[in-house]
Image (cartoon, rainbow, N blue to C red; front, side, top):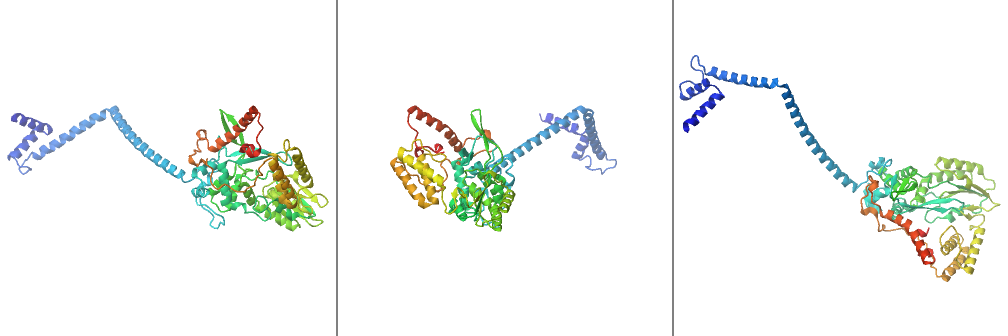
Length: 535
């Protein structure tokens, strides 16, 4: 057994080197030959050199054999390259996936505290967050701060300010009201959540609507049509001019520019302007859904709490210019919303020069005059300013008072059934509103009328309505901020509570009327009607 193992080791050593080298190594080991070439004609070095040469020769033969097989070599190269490429792709994919996950995580975190996109064409300035250093108005460092001050979540603010060309969601209830001079007026009443936010903007950003020129009297605390008409009492000449499409002529760009001028950053100005403006929409039914399609640019909606204050701020330059020309030509100027009034106590004022300067100034500030409502009233005829007579004493037109007294007489005699006053609403509420209007203009005449209306209310057990200017203090209970709205996927966006309210408003009146007809009961008066019937 031992001899066989020894023999195998010897054979293995001979195969690895050569027979001569093995013999030499054994002779050196046994002491018959020196380890290095000390003796003459020492063959040890030659034997070792020969072994190295043979090994090198063998490797060259192996390489030669490999190189002769070109196809195999190319396959090996390609296989190696493919393996390296797949490995690199795998590493790149893993690296990109990690980056994507990190970006998505960072995006979700930013979306929870910031607004970076509000739709096409309006998002360019959202990255600019620098407020004017010397602004006298309250400014906000970020959309998150603005949302906090308004008392809503950042998701609610994004939802209310997002620009949708086509959507199943609307923030307004739209209806028309007849104008006194004919035609209809388009009213856009904001939904509860938007209305609350707009009231907050009015109070906290627009200073409650008190920022206006001394010539403006519309929608300003402690000013009214009475204060607008009083400066023109006893004038020799009164000029009335009207701005055509006043609210719709003020577009999103002008509103955004106003907020920038007030010192807000581009981002905050964009968000505020989006909340305060809305485009006209076309309503379409498709696949059982109601779609609202934007038709035209965004503009101030007539019916939003913020619109009057914004118009007064935008018209400050117009008011200054018109006031300058009025003083130059000897006139007194006031403005109530879109109604412009110039009066002069001079017997022969420069009417043509005043009207020419006014027309030029109005066009310069981006407005258009409604020529059908332009009037020049001299002392010999009835002079009216915002519906009030200003010849000698401020008052309601005599013809209208006479018609109102006749209506009260008919109600006292025959009852209110079948009677009407004004453009709508229940007759018992309408007569109280007009009596209060007369009392505001002329308390001496208005007091007896109010007493007569109160007597009518008592006769029919009707609660006299109380007028209140209180604004919502707390957000609506159905605030949409409890969910996250995805503005990039409008087709799958869940409907907000506002949408449900609007759909219910469309469905309930028809159902209510059907129930009344089937029961044979009379329709309830306004004070017992739901909100959608009060219009």
